[in-house]
Image 1: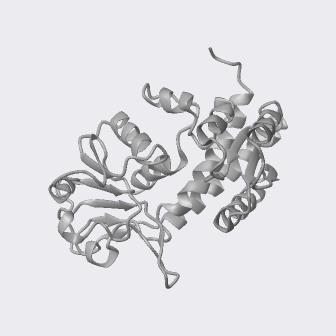
Image 2: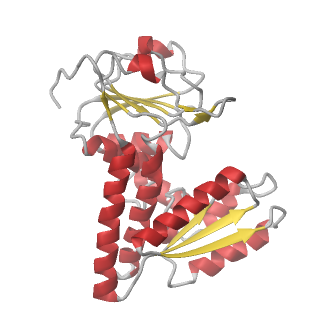
Length: 295
């Protein structure tokens, strides 16, 4: 991308198409792995309770695994399951050599300690990239697995040949799922990174400095056109369901579209990348399982 990359109308980044490409690549690589070694990547998913959104997301993951030729095991536990019952299921999957990735569907019921449950997953099988061991290794640039949404965002940038090195990247949102790991990934790619949040003072002044602006705060259309510099790359991670059923992002899409150089829509932008990268991480976990363990 040239130093001056402003255009009159932004290129809309088609996350759905890119995710399909990645899923096809994973499927082909999984086939080669199975033919060469007899190993099919295996994903174990744990759902506690019957949250409707989680059940829909789980079905999408199951279909994606089936399409990619993965082994998929699903554990549905009652909402009132004890922490020990959930931990026992995780330990079963930790010791199951046919399962290379473990995913605990979040959010968990309030009576369960999410941190304890995530930490019980073997780091090599933590395909969500949420385990403290993987987050810690991200500081050195060498985790077993990277969080799916942040690494998916980097894929969106890379597949559009959008330069990261030397750019000013501003992330609005500091969650351990998106904001913080994304900041480290961008730092590892030599961007200059600023993390903002809902308590940041003079936020528009900061966001207008961004060459790459990522909105991941969970507030509908929080980022307006006057907060975006001409020609910025705008990545919208937010998914907000309105009362009329519409899904909208954290960015005021129609007005920012006329100011940015690239922009992701909601839906169809970052969202599809999460499952695609989950499959990629599970494939990677299967490959790692065949290698000698490194200390």
